[in-house]
Image (tube, rainbow, N blue to C red; front, side, top):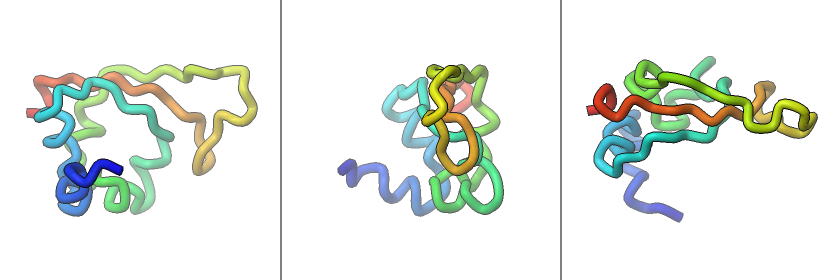
Length: 83
């Protein structure tokens, strides 16, 4: 467990955590950005979603590559945008 991430998640400022740690990739379901999920996931301020520059379905042929109704994606983040 990463306890350092908790304050950022609770405040909806996960983008700041990613920027401070130079994290440029996120493996996540696209549904995390919809229907109240951003608040639960730490993305509530919208900055992280705004800084996505691309996404790739790493396992397009795998029928089990599903979470919350969407296919899990590898997102590439613009680190300059996160700051």
